[in-house]
Image 1 (tube, rainbow, N blue to C red):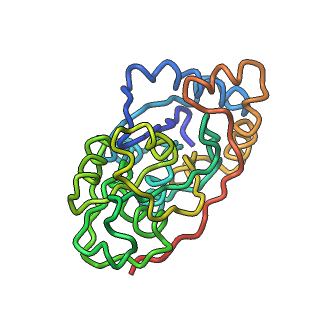
Image 2 (cartoon, helix red, strand yellow):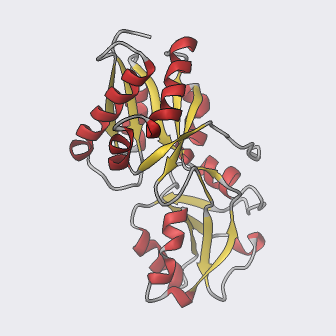
Length: 252
């Protein structure tokens, strides 16, 4: 690994500005390398809210680590040669979550009835995740489409309004369904098995095995270290656990 490496945070579809997050990312990177025994200043952190922007940053030669939602990991792990290092334990969610497919009440009830439909999701940029991880238990029609949206409320209104769309929601979004005034017009039709929320991974073996091991140990113990919780909480984290990446269905 070069003397100065970069940890790339990328969270497509979720709100947040790089400028607002940067001080907390800097604190996190500094605390992680200090706990891992890496040289001071050897790791910087950057944030990108878009898939393409994140990919561009992760293809830079100094991008040694990625911190990404699990859908991004599934979609791009092979291309970027990502090796999982740790799994995020997220405040209010945990280390794993279930994704939920929501349809109009009285509408489609199974996979066969979804011919011609479009799946709307914050994870829509990662169709491999949507079709072969979140919905691995279903054999979906060949003409199903997947679209990315950050406008969840608008998407759910379209579902309730009877358009040929369904919505795939993460655990936090699913928990908020009952607060909607039109919640009675929606129904859950299938849930995924538990999958990781987010992954920290080594990019293309750009971190040596020894340094990766020391960083992994530091991440697992960060919430117990003095001041560790204060550095984690602004990023909505309560710690890290060993990665448990589930198998997924093969693409047809």
